Image 1 (tube, rainbow, N blue to C red):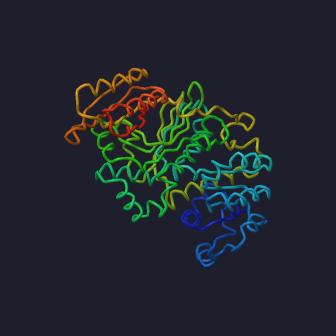
Image 2 (cartoon, rainbow, N blue to C red; image 1 turned 120 degrees about the horizontal axis):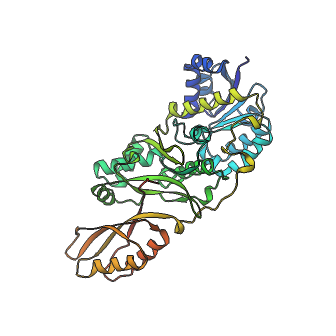
Image 3 (spheres, rainbow, N blue to C red; image 1 turned 135 degrees about the vertical axis):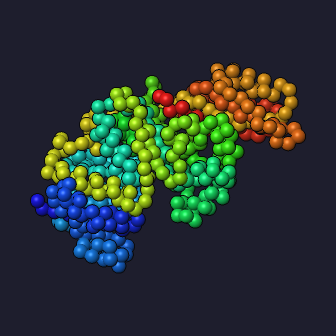
Length: 435
């Protein structure tokens, strides 16, 4: 069989890793596929790097020239971002080229434009590497769990944030100090906003939600809350109460719609997700037939992510002669069955809550706080006074049972209005992960 020719856009960390995997595992890939996969053309800012990394490939300065080449069957987009990458991908599809990308931002924000065009042009868009690096979660959702109704997905899907939270818990360090450490180790960018404020995780959970529930991409409706305002005291108190705080991406099929959110979350330390530390990723999927499944591994890095990129190339090569109707649909469901569904606003989601209140250490304070919670039908699971901060102020930690978020927010507003409460209430959502 004739070789499959790859046009590689970008030779950064993942692009270089992809070239290395195709080179070092060429024989294994050929044994599995029955044909050779080779890089025929490369586009990168550095011609020197391109010549060193892919000496047998043509160097192309213009990405639009690469996506039009006759000796390119599959365009592997590893530029990142949504500028030139978006335009190059759309042009490649127009030219009848199949696409492999690790670009979660591109798909979460513009997938609703990209996938219909790909179906029209009878080409495939594969994106395993866009979510959780080397973990094959996209294939699991599109194929492995195809017999199931997905109930919920909860994932630790940003290694930078997970490293920071792990270090804060283990060392008791402040967020700013651990962030500097993460930057020094190369786990965090010079501008870490995209990771620590939840954007990266939001793109990934948006993609998984679309696959799980058969909806268009809906990143604009995803709630984002990062970890930059977390206090190390809350991490310590959570652990004392048998919980760990993780930045989770969560999507769940609820009675009134779909929950789609990213935020710090208390989870019981007995749960497997609670014990995923450092830069590792993990995704928990709960489905009606198979129950709970967990996918764990390296969520980033040159070779783990390149492993997913090359697996997508192999999948395309196996189905390259098939028409659209004989391929796995891009969003797991047949295109006509991908339908918009209500994304619940945060006020309508159901969760349990951790509250930390600073209040005057005087008789009646706890009673007033408990009464305001009861007024909103919020049931208390545990209430602990952590001690007196100074001579007049105590710190109170409250865990609630499950309730609708608008009720807890109303109760908090009432608590903060009390004369005896002298600081804003800290609220962190809790998930039992038993659904």
